[in-house]
Image (cartoon, rainbow, N blue to C red; front, side, top):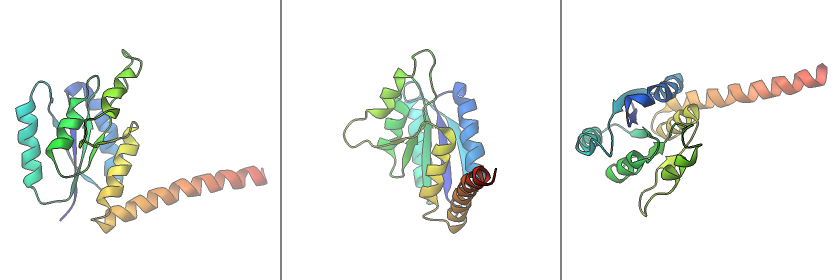
Length: 160
């Protein structure tokens, strides 16, 4: 049973941010579903989506993308048993201050917050790698590639 990464955007305006997550997720071999739903404007729709995903027996992780007042991450986390990663887009309009709506959650609501889209996908891959040895191997290969780059750079300094 292949694990699933569900990426839930608050609106279509979050698409560029979501595409970065999808690209990184696919590099780890993750199956992804991309959906749009607002906790503020379409709460019933979001709950319907989450209930359908929760009925699916596959291991899964949710990544939520919502800025300004990020109710989507908390709403999702409170509605599902699987891990939730909030990956809010940076907002020029608020100078990044809207990040606080992702950091402060009520008691019993605990989405992780990862600001870089590729790192959100990496965390999802590490979590889903617990269930899938192929995903775990892709994470290890990614880490080894990063280490090899640093070691090659160091060797270049010593010989150059």
